[in-house]
Amino acid sequence: MAEYLPVYKPGQALTLKASASVTGGQLLAVSGSGTVAPAGAGATNWIGVAGFDGATNDNVTVFSSGVQALVASGAVAAGDLLVAGAAGTVATGATPAAGAFVGVALTSAANGAKVRVRFSR
Image (cartoon, rainbow, N blue to C red; front, side):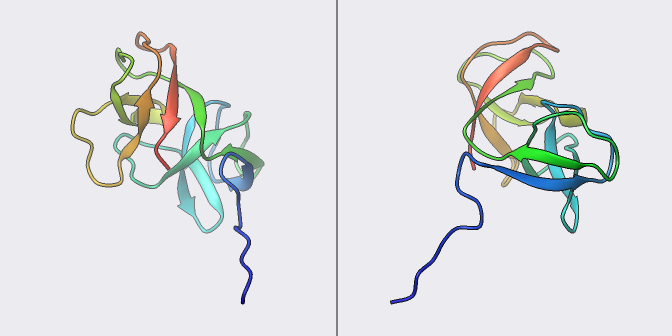
């Protein structure tokens, strides 16, 4: 019987190269082969959250699952379904498009404040 080991285990960090400046806590999206950048509004290719600030071409730690604290774009209530907002934030999305669903808000937050999010991937 063949054995299999995952490339990355859920909850563990992975390292990718930044193709643009990133800020710790920003939602990131795949921007190219082995690269990430801040996710744009409605991004379906989001991958996780930046573990720290990084400049273009820096290696960045990306947390890709679990519960993360992200900046809210607009008011968020606990239980809201969240999608990628502008510039690596999250926003409410009553009926998220396929692939756009980031997760569920576990806390409430005002615009610009941190909201705890249970990632959907």
